[in-house]
Image 1: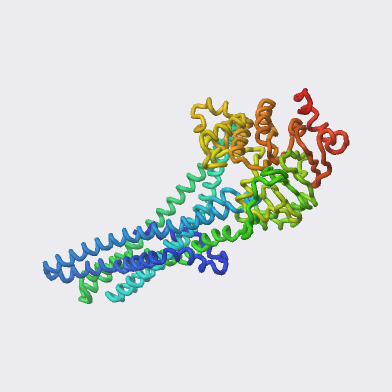
Image 2: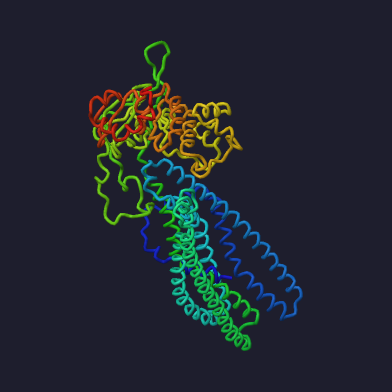
Length: 639
């Protein structure tokens, strides 16, 4: 009965006891248990009652043999038998009630922790996600939360139940016969010490098996997504991939066989020990029954009680590991919850207006964008992430200035209702500028303002309402076209969806799809081409109807036909809005009202296409290297 449970206990990793728990962890755990304190009290009471009942049946068995069967007293036999049946029914009820309370408390704690961690992670800056390993984050929401839940339900009740059961059983054993009890208990260490050594081997095998399982899972995850599967097929490596996977799978198989055999050895050992102790008890106890020291019913009760000692002893022998494992799980969850988001909303933040008044009666316009002596460096790992969440830990401390100096004392204005293009060599800081406008990051010095308001002084919700962004790799969820569009505005009507798609030059495609707007776009939108994904993203932007549009290389890497469709959609999307565009196409540059040439984190030139060409500076150089070959695609010159 207890063999498998004890095996699990001995397999637990003892190294966990060496980990240091932050002060106050236990107190914080109490806060999560507080909402369930009434149910928890009932649960622990019933768990204790269930542990006490452990000794009832052996004592009733003693009574029915000594006072009923031996003395041929039918009344005692019937009455005690009915009591045994009643105890069994009551114990079944206790088991049902315990399971109900355990599930209610455990699932409640899981819900509280998961929702809190998920909400907290959502508030982390984008830099957090660029460093953290997705699998590690998911593990915090899955394995660690489950381990934390086990601390409140499993570990607490297990310690109380096993300790109480062991005390009651030992007291009863010594009450029935201290001689037989001492002789039987002497044999138990002969099992405990070899079992712990066997358990350490099983623990090492289990840890290695988990590691190989994780590697096999990572391989499947990488090869089964669209990009990974395409790479395998393009390079003609399916056979090699199958062989590599078979190698990992065979290792998992071999470890499984070895672990199963160790487990069987453990089970056979505990069964053998139980048989040996039973033989000793019957041998010594039988002699005492013959000599008249006690009756045969007492001997049977002693045997039954001794068989119930192994489980509590096995579990309590690893109580430190159990407690520390649970505490470490909580500590790992708290580690994420204690990571302060870099982007915070002030308590007195104001609402950023979507439109601002201009001269004239009731006339409004899109707000402008101002960079006021902005300097910025990307945050270090210590500022935004945790080493335990990153796939590769640095062997040496990260340099504080490793990512310093992306933008330097930058000042410019993107005028209201006009298109401002950002041009410059790779790594100049163009994408960083767009990230600051949408407040993915905050500047280290200076201020980014919209409509004259520092972005750190406005509410995040109002900022996201005002600023709309389309990135180069427009992300679509593995869902329908409709759901991806409604992500921008859940309350949009069918007609508004159609109008947004028409304006984005994508409706002609969507309407001929078998399921129309209810067509599944696939993982990351892979069922659509690059240009089609861009236009769906633009339709989503139009549905949101922001006053400011940020396009981060939105037309890069598109063929001429797709670019023409996207450009047509852009002309609609940008009309009447303040626009900031990272330009890689000549058509975009020529249509810009203002071009900012960015180099090494500074604005080095400002002007229109013709003015900057005539100046003969960096823009003219970039034009000849990046844009001149596109001239033939626009035979009519500037629009």
